[in-house]
Length: 261
Length: 301
Ligand SMILES: Nc1ncnc2c1ncn2[C@@H]1O[C@H](COP(=O)(O)OP(=O)(O)OP(=O)(O)O)[C@@H](O)[C@H]1O
Ligand SMILES: [Mg+2]
Image (cartoon, protein in one colour):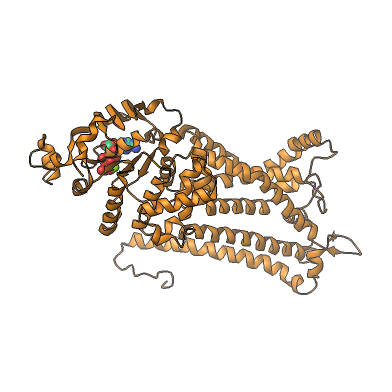
């Protein structure tokens, strides 16, 4: 599966990031990074804490602008359109599914959690919502566990179940891009493997940005992997190259082999 | 001594022991005060409550004639209805304003504006109730006369507006705390799902904070029920079952305040006023208890 990483580069990239600079006040979080994301690939994004990975995802779905005092320069294009020129920011956010590090079941029923985004997007018909809820919970490998108690509170589920609920929720608005930010932090290894299987299947339907603190997870899943360090993109290449004995950059080698810093 | 110090504090320095003892005494004394007050109020009214007072008449009759020479009547129904109706109308005004202001302060306004707003709310809370009564008696009185074309503006509506202005600060500050207590991760998650700020408020924050908001409303109501001076001055103070917001009314609290100074200590009328005190105590106790249970419910979730 890692082979299609090269082929897809001929098609227009789904995301084009060029010279992206982000600052929180005076503090720079991304110092001008550029890369493309190809259709239907899983792009692994690795890097130590505080290197700017979460910031990058927040730029892409434009939730960074909810934090005051941030400045963004450079451009991010989605299907060739600069996202800063998109007026319907809420619609833009629904084109991107976002899974945050700690599972956040909204204090609503399981059903309402998954139906949240479709409803805000204007879908009202019960039958249509029912269908979406079932499809997404199936996709997130949670349906069998919760199908008999869809009206219990989402916050009452276990951590691993809540994380799958957030994945179901992120899929509910049929995103073109799915971003996952260190989703396995609060999840046990078995659930992590189940979610990894889910992602492996999903790549045929969407493009996935997988920020991960487990380098082995990127190695298992990603077509290509980007290494970010202190706000700089050190290297981006096929996962095979990044995890080989001779990536272009020595820091990459040190980081993926765990003898960093 | 041993009762006051459950845990062994053998290794604590002397100053720590003294401070701990002092804090325990403060805690215990507040409990003693509450029970002491209840005991006192109860004792003053108990005699007449158990022998003499027709409790059915007290709760169901509207005839309040405690000073009549040959036909004394102690029917408090009009006073009870007065208290509840003025409070209910006050809540109809205060709840939308209070919750609206709390939502605005916590979700929509800039940090700088928020500080200003909070100072204003605190100022509002610090205005003594007699000043509100004074405003009701003069300004609001004339306003109601002008707007509704009635002869006298000292009405239930007037009292309710004053009570609303007094309970809004309580509602705002408690409701704002409740909204602030909703984790930011909920807001972030909802926003990432493409919710507008208003959708975040009514689809996520209000359900998540509903217990805290309910507690805010109940404590605001408890404040209104117990309020005396402003309603005494603003509502016309006449025994009457109200037929609408422009009727004049009289409340339980105002009755005690107006009449207690002029009755003979220990007499029937004196005791009835204390029975009204017991009734008020019970009502506010129940409302506060419900609010506490609701708040406890939040903590357990
Ligand atoms: N809201 C904020 N205000 C100020 N600075 C911030 C804020 N969020 C992030 N930063 C700073 O931006 C830099 C990048 O943070 P970011 O969260 O993007 O890193 P990360 O790679 O996701 O780290 P982690 O692996 O710990 O999640 C850090 O130096 C961080 O301190
Ligand atoms: Mg992060």
